[in-house]
Amino acid sequence: MDIPAGLLPASILWGAALLYTLILAAALLTAPWSKLADNEASHVYFAAVAVVCLLWTLHAGIAPGYNYHLLGVASLCLMFDWQFALLAVSLALLVTTWQGPAGWEAFALNALVMGALPVLSTRILLYASQRLLAHNFFIYIFVNAFFAGALGILLCGLAAAAVLALAQGGAVNRTDGDYLLFIPLLMFGEAFLNGMTMTLLVVYRPRWVSTFHDHWYLDGK
Image (cartoon, rainbow, N blue to C red):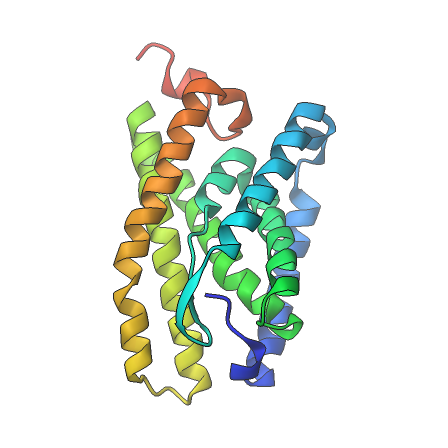
């Protein structure tokens, strides 16, 4: 999913850079920075960034631009909320871009596809579930972790395929079809990764999960 800059026209790269800058500015301006003042919280945050960096370096692919790896973004969003999740993704992408062949010109586009899109979809799903569904532990885990993880990587894969097709003048080739065939397998892996991670954290370290509230999901249940 790390799309190389060489495959894309300058118009797409500049448009992505503008959109990413606006979303990143909103995150920086609205992030509750006081939460990182606590030593434990800051250590957990940067440890999570390191784990995501490692996760993103473990990838496979079928052609340049058609790479696969798990994201772990839904867990970041649930643990730290969308602002810090987007910043964590940006930090992880700095490392993978430095080590990989994508190129710095594609940094903003990859941050949107692999970061902003799954982060915001997870946050929107959390917002909807908190208002439309019962406040229940199992709903939190299965909807906001399992399903949100699967949805995030589905949107990421579709967006990457759409960008590559757009760069080719709208043409869809055989490689695009082969690429999309792997997305369902990634959805299962991503759902399991985020679902099990959040289950363990909520049970053993609920204070690390900023979007989980005992009085909503546990008290009186």
